[in-house]
Length: 332
Image (tube, rainbow, N blue to C red; front, side, top):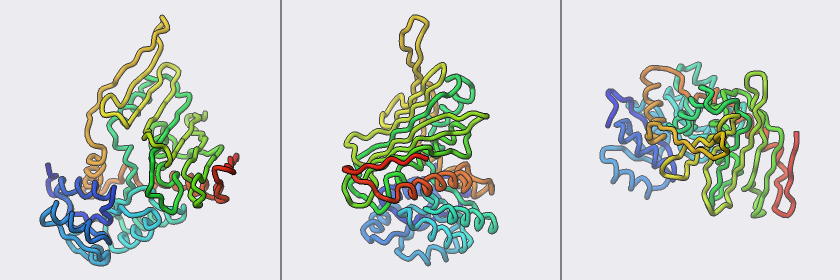
């Protein structure tokens, strides 16, 4: 189903994740151009989406008069440069997480978008997840009672290792989601642990001990990320005084569950109902709606800034890359 009078977008990067953005914007009737350096990927896009122009020339995308916005799904160390070029060309931007790898770069992009009155949205997907939004409502309503602790585990086996740590790859999801659920704008990292298990200079197992200042108190939590776990785990646990919520995104059904004890000491498990739609489609729709209305996206540069701030600080603290034989834990 296509949105009426939908603005046209170009997607730069149609790799493992970019191809999902291509699919969704195509289904929404918004896809005009796809750009990638790999001719085989472009050939596949041309066959799958008739009428969509493909190119390996970024300049031609930025000069395309019929394109209102550019969607950037390239390696994170290219995000700042591509987003800046796109904003300077007068086009709106949707950039995958993280917004940038440097806090000053994140600020510069926000200032440029504001100056040019352009939409700048970051792909923090989980803020559009129906189960996450259901959980946010449950927390706000007091269903869980006072939140005591929150933990996010995100682990998988990643053989396509790149030149940044597992934290830049996975933690943006955890940090953006936890801040969103707790209504916290300034999370703090109290302790960092990281390991370079392959002795290649890349941290592939890490954890962050966190504090989320909320309402005059701090809610403590932890983020655990791994690229070397053969069993994929995507699980958020929110411990409350009354109930504990578990959001397990690796299962097909009943992703969100509430756990509590009855007066008799029996464990009670409830499964809240929510509208089960694809989060990425909802995210893409939100971006297109913002292009039409001019509203700031839910995941704007302000939202992304805190993620970049935390990860840039953590990267400095893990600058002496630890190995499995010489793990290093840093405390503030």
